[in-house]
Image (cartoon, rainbow, N blue to C red; front, top):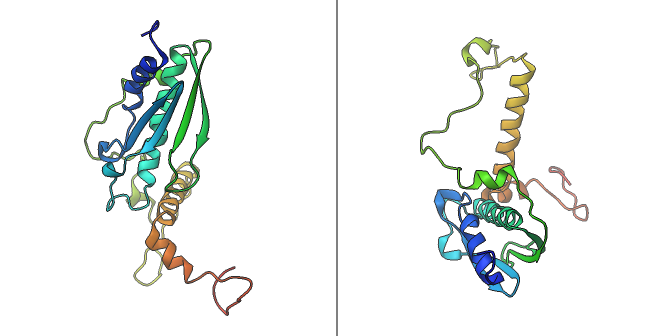
Length: 194
């Protein structure tokens, strides 16, 4: 709607925003249009309380939604300024996007918005190696020691381990477990870490 109101344009760009991926396609977002601003809010009714207790996946989806919206606005000749973003878990709104006319900026990512899809098939790993050939067994009781010499495989495994650690540390149960090992410098203990 090139000659229509800014509100109509925002509604049009929201068609791209809601194509953002979200956990189980829950689409955990709500929108409020105020003049030339879009307020992005978290939709608590579409949250996965058991599957996403920390709301991490919801925030990833909200971030993708905001990015899609900004790409669409840019493609159609508007600059999107994020004038507010939430830093606290329950802060509302999540983001405030202010829109101003500008030059048209097209990105290959914009064109990818409508082409993105899922195959709904099981995840296929990109690690391409035969683990049996890489394993040489050491005598560590019931554990098996694996020696890996290929630097590409080492980097891939390190990346997977780092991602797993990040996911683990985002879980409340893991945080509570780690709290037992942490102490304040004001109250030092024999064991634990500062």
